[in-house]
Length: 191
Image (cartoon, rainbow, N blue to C red):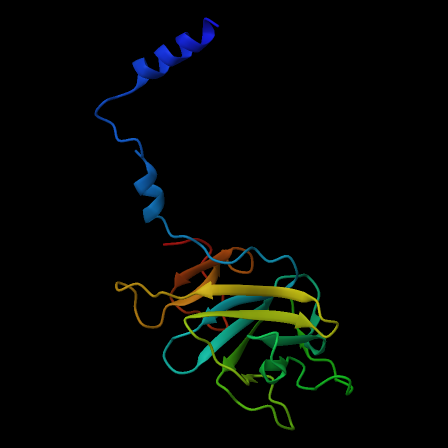
């Protein structure tokens, strides 16, 4: 029973009346906050330009050590709308798809410009575009989510109009607002 009054006394004695109860919290608020989660697979959504100059675009990358056949994947911004799926191999299943390989460390930029799906399918132009609060998913032809991002893109007043959301570090991190690097490596750390 003597321990409780002693702990209470110690807490009161150590309290600095001039200090604010949230000292140090403001520093964390000013630090950039990442969006999304770190990728778990090798085919990765690496950068998203939801409101840059020109059309929206997304950059995919192969973070693995082996080539990835894009025939096994779709890109979508609305998993519940069949007209919002882009077959990354350029062929709608179950039709045979000649291998379309993404080499290890390579990047692929896809324009999100509302290009309707028509034969032949152009796997570099998606049948949708993005809003400032949206989502993107890489889905396997078997229906599994390979990677995804649910984002809010509130570009700050001090940022240029072409800021994108990119994984920092490249291939692996969370998404942060940075200068665009389509088809090239994202920064390894925040400026």
